[in-house]
Image 1 (tube, rainbow, N blue to C red):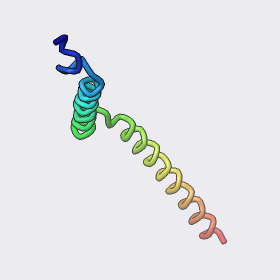
Image 2: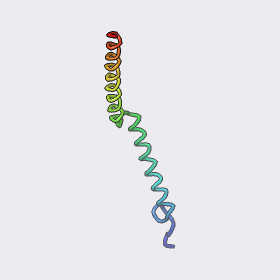
Image 3: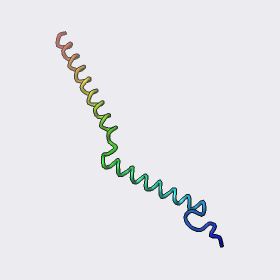
Image 4: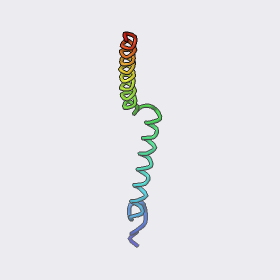
Length: 71
């Protein structure tokens, strides 16, 4: 017997199982990083942009309000 088809590396199913385990570990790692806030820098940039937009809207509302008072 040459062991063909036995073990983790000898067959397609062994390769598929190894690939599945690697993807599972990578998925868990990404999930943990997202929950810890390590990868939240994009969210912070988005919040800064939203805050800037809110300030612009407030300024526009104040301008409209002052023009209405003039009328």
